[in-house]
Amino acid sequence: MHKNKGFTLIELLVVIAIIGLLSTIVLISLSRARQKARDARRLRDVRQIRLALELYYDNNNAYPLNTDNDCGGWDTGYNGGLGSNDIFLRPLEINGFITKNPGDPSTTAACGGYVYYRYTAGMYGCDTSKGAYYVLGIRDMETSDNPHPLSPGWSCSGRDWQNELEWVTGGFEK
Image (cartoon, rainbow, N blue to C red; front, side, top):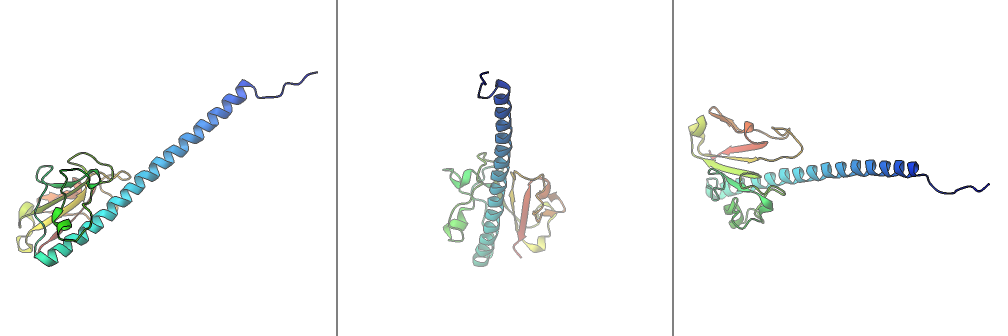
């Protein structure tokens, strides 16, 4: 008797299905890891921006004014800071408090990514005696629902920015 050596069609299909399933699992895991890495960069960027804002304040006794006004008056940092018209928080870069114009690593929409707004004293019911204040936030975190668990939050009696942004903080000038 002659014995055939080789695989049957069914055996080959089973192996191909297993390889396809494993490949899908690996790709999903890799995608999730990339999302987490981008979120980690976002959090690192806003920590750097906050520090730069405080250094700017120490030198100027005020936080920078809005300079970009991409989205309803908000300065926004998107597209990795590479957009030709994206001048997000340019005073921080010009004065040497940050070395690179920060921008969200993946968001390309003008109203997405990082946002900054400097409000005058008393806006939205904030205590007038504390002076003007800024709100700094991230609109598009990929691995959490609103709010991000590490968000310090920011609100006044007339507005809670945590309901609008996934990560938010702020600071008063006095």
